[in-house]
Amino acid sequence: MGLQGLKFISHVHFEQTVYPTGSFTIGQIRAGDMDPRKVTKQVFTQATTAKVRRDKGWLVASFSDLVHCVAQLGSHNSRFNLFFRGQNEDYLDKKNQTKLYPSIFRPDKGQKRLHNNVVRARFKKLQDSMKSLRANSHDLGLLFSPLSIHNEYWLSLLQHYGICFTPLLDLTQSLRVAASFALLNLETRRFQESGYLYVLGMPHLHGCISFFADDGMTIVKLQSVCPPQALRPHFQEGYLVGRWPRTGAKQATDNFAYWLVGKYQLDNTSADFFGGDFPPIPADALIPRDDEFRDKLITLFNDMG
Image (cartoon, rainbow, N blue to C red; front, side, top):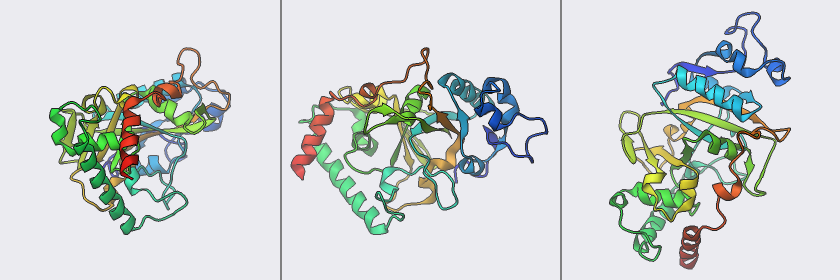
């Protein structure tokens, strides 16, 4: 089940059973008494994904410090290909552990459980949407792509533009993009006081659409898969990950929190997390307002009802 039982090196909160007497406390770092860059080596320890999922998230007060933390994380875990995901909230399961499910396997807002009939209905809509996208590709201005023989080509467009729920999860290899998404309120298009950034240790890619039989997943590089007129995926340096082979039912391995190697809580209470040297990516760049391809997609599916 992913990296659940595999140990790697990660930031975690202080525990007396792990850290020797005299280690810096998380309170000292939060109060600004210690520079996290000076204590990074002392606060790394062996951990499992279960431990990282239960952790509250290592507190980071600036993008510069986040770069240093992730640099250490990557150096200690070189066998992994690091991907990032930013969220405004840390969604937890019944055991208070982080969960990262693709949209098709998430309960509706306000609901605690996801029923099988809802999943089946969502997959039915997804299949119908993929057929419609293929049938109307010419009207959308989609030129022939050798990758269009793969379902992932069409799934990527539906997922990234939010046309319907899909079994794919958005990731990026840009730390700045992920940090911007973690702090950006998409409704107000303003940056908020806190957010969460997740680091996932994934296999190394071998193609535009990479299939990993041993790990039971596929990873899609959106820059190569999405057409050039689809602006959003290119601005976000996006990737998609999903279970492979897919089925129409929810499984434990659809939870990509099992691949977590790092979890960071971003502190932007002073509105200076990014700072002058590392400005955030503005909302209009991450989610362009003027996106002709998005407008065509929305019009197509609105006309279909």
